Length: 449
Image (cartoon, rainbow, N blue to C red; front, side):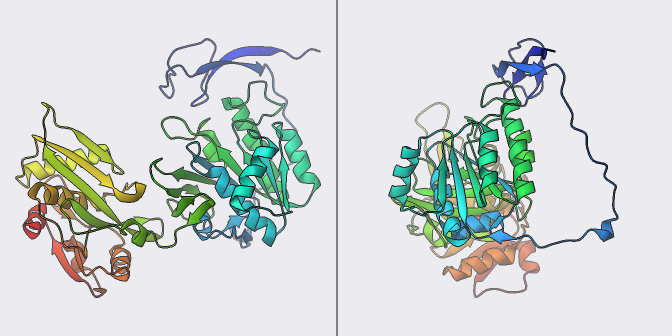
């Protein structure tokens, strides 16, 4: 009997299915995201073996067997190394270094543990060879495969004793079980499920390279990030040589951990001391403040720069890089209302040095200090670190992991610190720093002036 097919329209952002084409997805709100696809009218379900639930106490726990990639920052983000049988998704802008990082990791894994299969569905084998020569990758245990059919990839990987498989990229491979085109929601989901079953059953680590949309999210259905064990994002501005690998999901380690790399002509070099890197050109000038931010399990000191200048237009300009736009606007309003500083006729620019993106509110006090310093043309002390959250009434609120931040500040040579007063009261150690606790932004302004 001939199999029946039906035509549907599916949103390529969230997977919502509609019987007809519509301009805007009612589920995720995306415009122009519906694509016509073919689906089988009935699905065949395999018979499942009977399983019985067991007691929580009777479940045995075994330690995860991790493989070191030989790249310390990569291992840190993964939680200490690659777990056998894990599925790792790495996303980032084109040309940011995803393939470069995985080739370098494959070199180290193949020399330490065994064979690595690198599957390229986008580039020819000659192109990969040229990149490998530039990076100095020459291991005999790295095997290249140019294939887009996922069933062939899995069959080939099952025939030999591979310890890791790299799929570059998940948007370009396809499975015969789905009728839609490669890169569609259905194909990405089905291919990822097949790779997950393969990784778990064989105990082989699988790395997936993922494209990103113009909004910066990994292209394809959101369920892709739920399927995999670890989701990593490569961040970095095109004008900077530094790259940040950030973990947003990790079943085998801490999330929101970061690794810092430097892009060179010979590949990615890991940066073991990011604080010294971000402060390497910090000097005594107005509009610059040093803050301590916590990323995962490490504290990083970075420089925040602000430029306040009289506006020559009717509407003052606001341009912020590396910080949340809405939050900085909120801090400017607090500074005007509570700090009595008139910024309504001034252009304000804020930048985080080195391409780092700060998301936690502990940088509020440093941003306000940098803006005030630029407005007053008074530089801050060179060996001063500032952190604290600012409330709408101008009060300085406590932040977490204060001792970790102060320890890092002391380690790189800072002498003074301005922190929330409530944190100072609970502080057990001073770390050879002259620490001042503040309760409001007015106290900070008085200190700067």
